[in-house]
Amino acid sequence: MVNLPEKAVPRGELFDRMRERKQQDADWRGGKTWSLIYPAGEEVDEILREANGLYLFENALNPMRFPSLRQMEREVVEMTAGLLHAPEGAGGCMTSGGTESILLAVKTARERARAERGVTKPELLAPVTAHPAFAKAAAYFGLEHKQIPIGADLRADVAAARNLITDQTAFMMGSAPNYPHGVVDPIPELAALAAEHGIAFHVDSCLGGFLLPFLERLGHPVPPFDFRIPGVSTLSADVHKYGYCTKGASVLLHRSRDSMQIHQAFIYQDWPGGIYGSAAMAGARPAAPIAAAWAVLNGLGWEGYLQLAQRILDATKRLQEGIRSIEPLHVIGEPVMGVFCFGAEGADIMAIGDVMDDRGWHLDRQHGPDALHLMVSPEHDRIVDPFLADLRDAVAQHGTSRGVEARYSE
Ligand SMILES: Cc1ncc(COP(=O)(O)O)c(C=O)c1O
Image (cartoon, rainbow, N blue to C red; front, top):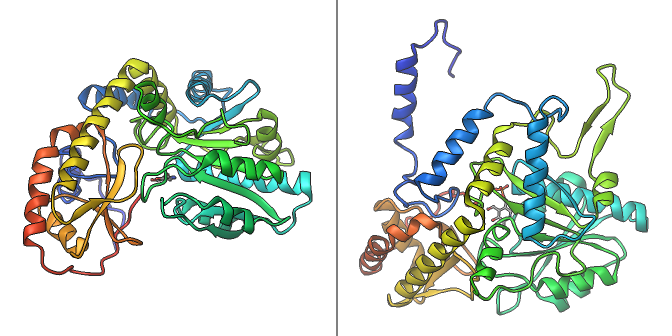
């Protein structure tokens, strides 16, 4: 066990030790990771460094003390609402990430179902491909978690969803897109089904919220997924994914600001310490993610995001064409953006992943079907050729998989 040192470690030594430890970490700057970080280039990194530095010490708990933070948070929410076509009367807040946004959406839906429909044993319906944050929300907030199966196109099966609805269903959702296969669930059909039964419907656009609007503007086919669909109640979009912000920044939007204020916000007045209120789950909140999100959104604008989206489209096309040209690899399903996975007919794809690991490429593994997973960021356009060359070798050389090793994906 490590104890607090009696004497201060000299500053130089301190940072030498950290740098040395850091050498074990993934080489994301070299484009060798495919999740967790979304590299967009040195110019974006500089904006993020400066914005984080400027707000490193402030606390976003009390918006009265730091009005600049309140203003930036409001503007980040408004810019996101604009991108995703939230209507007049919509509300929203920033959270620490996709998981917190999802937890809050589920908690809000549970309160709403209790208040409006007298639901006492709430149930949550989510496709099997939904992010584990929905299972977590169900576990935290006491909802029964029911999984909607997917069809041959890997999207939620709407007829199966209909059969799972009961008078206790409090929450339904679809992903735009989901993490495993990068496909968008049939959001209009699922949202209409939810609306028919008075059930809150959430779109998990944590991955797509800051990429799909730009792909749509570029003329790329994007299935309907945002507030233009009438039954959508809430939507999560992560600035710290394809918004390219440093970690700790997501936006949760509500079609109805009133519903957010009534069912999400928390106010406590019986404390000797004074009135305590918070919109999201955290108490003290770091200011830097709010500042960084505001800075990157303004620092890129439509122009910057469109350029980065085009780089993703180009790199994804080259990667998918390259993968398809290597026997027996195939891209799974019809992914909508740079998030996709690929398998190998009759070969051990996990063993291919092991050879890629040995060459420093960090590919997440997944099952059902077995596959290796990629999330393409703008900076990946530099490494398409070396990646494909290593992949070709890995397919030629692979033996059998090293087998079980716990691997965490996003
Ligand atoms: C589709 C989707 N939703 C939600 C999340 C959760 O986001 P976070 O890791 O920021 O909590 C992820 C993470 O990758 C995701 O891919």
